Length: 180
Image (cartoon, rainbow, N blue to C red):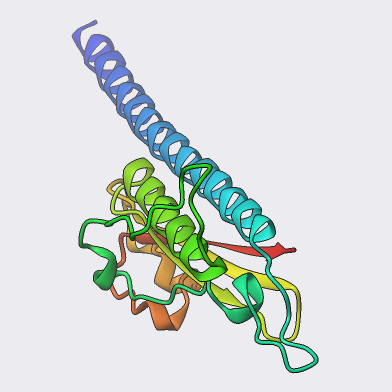
């Protein structure tokens, strides 16, 4: 009788440990899904900002402006984005503001970086315009505090661009192609 009780306690303990492990994995994947949803929202946001300030292509001797001039390109490394985001001057946020397409792009990038930094843990961005298409490659990176094992490390999946210089295995990147 005592042996049967001990066996049942041992089986119950194993079952409870399995449930605790399942709960931890559920929390980890739920948080990862939330971060990816925020990254998707941020990519959509910068896409709309670029569409709103597309500018003009440099044809017939005219200089390119806005998106076409590469004003939205932001290629700073992950470590280089650790500092606080400052808003450029002039602010271009009032009805009487007169801003160039470059100044508007600088404001858009600063506001977008601030959002990424606020909504994701150590959120960072990387944007590179495609010279042969009306599109931009967008990477959004963050530090994932819940990375449990090296099998889930982004460096194994090559999620981050090499120019972002990410060596920490807890950094996650999401890639988006924004077509204008």
